[in-house]
Image (tube, rainbow, N blue to C red):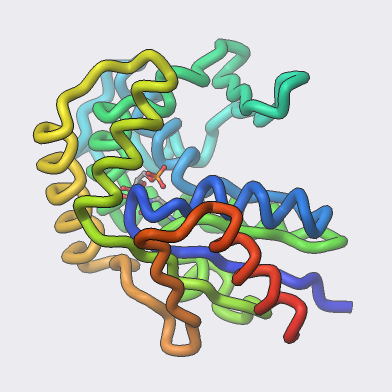
Length: 222
Ligand code: C5P
């Protein structure tokens, strides 16, 4: 029997990560945070001194990532790369910028494709990213494209980072988000855009709980 896949795509700060996590919990499904794989590739490159334009070596790093996704007792995430705890490093803005640079390289995307598809296991999967519905899981049962205004996304990201003790100015963050949006939507391979059959969900001014509920209502319609 086919495994149900819920694809959630959208720009940074749209609330994708949180909504995907809550949806996976509510449905008892597996979760794929595909952005983390691009972030880990960028971290791995930095640790090994690989340049961000060395496509072949970056693809090799992406294919060989030794990563473990775990949860702490309080439900928060813990990510290990080759045994080293990189949870905080994964979420920094500079890692995000590195991720969007390596994510524009076709060989890196290709190298991560099978790994991402390996997350499709019973009883189901919630997959969070930029190209889940368009490329990685084109046959997903439900495709959601989550958006929010650029200002609101910058504000949310600011609060998220502050809560994690990471200090960054709102203006700098807005610029970073704009740059990242541009790179993600304008790249030639798997650019960020809604799948033709995606349902658009604008989270501006809505609580995470309300957005999650709308997504659950859509799942119930399947
Ligand atoms: O979602 P997150 O902010 O962790 O993603 C980091 C970067 O990884 C994005 O800006 C994007 O460039 C890239 N990415 C991607 N395709 C995905 C997920 C993330 O290109 N499916």
